[in-house]
View (cartoon, rainbow, N blue to C red):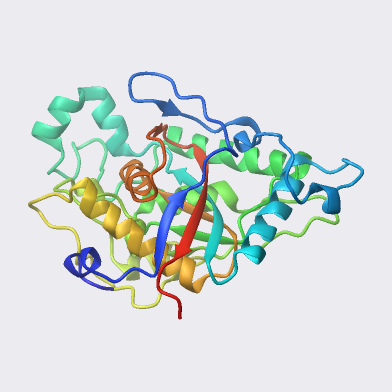
Length: 305
């Protein structure tokens, strides 16, 4: 993997923008918190492709949207790539629970450099029981929406290497069953280093080794070049939002150039979602733990092959 400094100065093949007008959200509270919307918030509207694809107006909104998405990629071939990305924030981890218990000021001043408090451990934090419940609730959401609304499951799954995201990804998507006639994509998630949380002194964001991940999450595959030990986390310093956005842009460059699937999933963190918002110009919001939001992202090709 390139160094973080190199990521900031890399040559970009794409210009990324979040495309508005297809999904609704209902932000609430001072931080504009959002949760998973029914039907993923897809706005029921007509598309230019409906007359050919659904002349009888008998298909589900999600079926029509997926057909429209495919037509965008076909018509813009060589000029742009469109991907629907389901972005999941991991469920509650032990670090989240500790911060909620003591307050953000005490968490930052006393606890973030420690690995636990003698009762719970938050170094590369696991999910709490509440976090597990949230992930299982997402599994039920996917099961119901995919079956009843024909909301398409991801064709590719990407996850941060931190334990709470691996657990969330596994619990959210494994074991979903679709009705006869609906194709179920294989669940073989890929670990992406650049999907991890903003780098800081917080021990909750220092990851375990690749060997540990391989032993405990054998279903997951590693991206090419994944380094066994964590070489990114440092006990001092912090990534800025701009630096994190550059890291997410590099991730998007990789995915848009090398993955032909148009519907994919990111299992990640609140800070990484903020960086994705900054990298694509999306209207700001904050995702509650254990919830998923859709991004329709256009990658305009600026450096053709």
